[in-house]
Amino acid sequence: MTAEANPISIYQIRNLLLDRESQGVSFRLAVPSLQIRQGEKIALIGESGCGKSTLLDILAFIAQPTESDGFLFHPEELDVGVHIDYHWRKRNLNQLGDLRKKHIGYVMQTGGLLPYLNVRDNMNLSRHVLHQEDDGSVEQLAMQLGIARHLNKLPETLSTGERQRVAIGRALAHNPSIVIADEPTASVDPFAAEKIMSLFISLAEARNITVIVASHAWQHVNKLGLRRLSHHTQRSSDGRTTETIVNG
Ligand SMILES: Nc1ncnc2c1ncn2[C@@H]1O[C@H](COP(=O)(O)OP(=O)(O)OP(=O)(O)O)[C@@H](O)[C@H]1O
Ligand SMILES: [Mg+2]
Image (cartoon, rainbow, N blue to C red; front, top):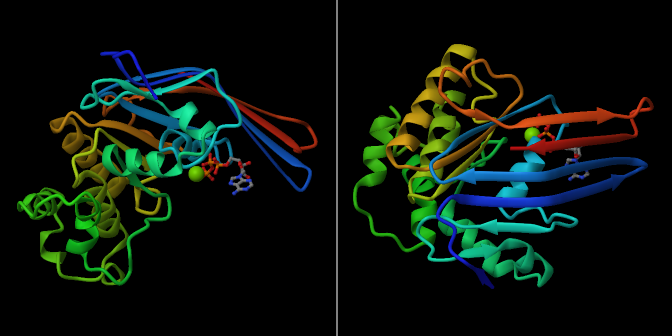
């Protein structure tokens, strides 16, 4: 199902809720209103457990919202926007998967590189799935990320920071409209984190890629010119319920 073209926002979300309950502990993420424009660089900052990864999973069509009044996804290269809420209701998981593969790059909190593929093949993975030709862009990207000399190595032989740069390269390689990054620099020292982060943002900037990045505590947000999403987290005194409200 499609909607009228909207030249402004890649994401338009209204009154979205995701509820989770496990062993008497409940979590709610509420997004009354969220608009993200193509090319924007967004930061989502908050303490552990507040729902950052959950929101990113919603934006990547991995986690299904419990309900929403509207979830329109409209990357520049589509003539009309796609109603993600409609596809979830209809359980059109293949369509959601195809949209994700084509338009989204994801840098996972846990890295997510395939251990049995070398760096080149890991970086080529999303291009391969989309049948994109080998045009030398992966080698160029590896050069820009400072990992060209590692292209033939397996991930286990790289340092944590190098692996994170491979994961960023993999998320950018198929030229998606959006890269969603879940704490992409969580396991390196602050100096390396700042370097990797600014490299990531400048590569995305040059390609007009929308970036949404989550972080625990991150000092470089203002410096890199990211828009910070506001959020408010409330926990009940017995710790059994947590509710986070995100607006932006
Ligand atoms: N698979 C799951 N099943 C049940 N509850 C979950 C699951 N994943 C996360 N949660 C709960 O949902 C809430 C939000 O988790 P989420 O992973 O989004 O937080 P986060 O902000 O990304 O935290 P962190 O900074 O530690 O990565 C937490 O209370 C967590 O315990
Ligand atoms: Mg997380």
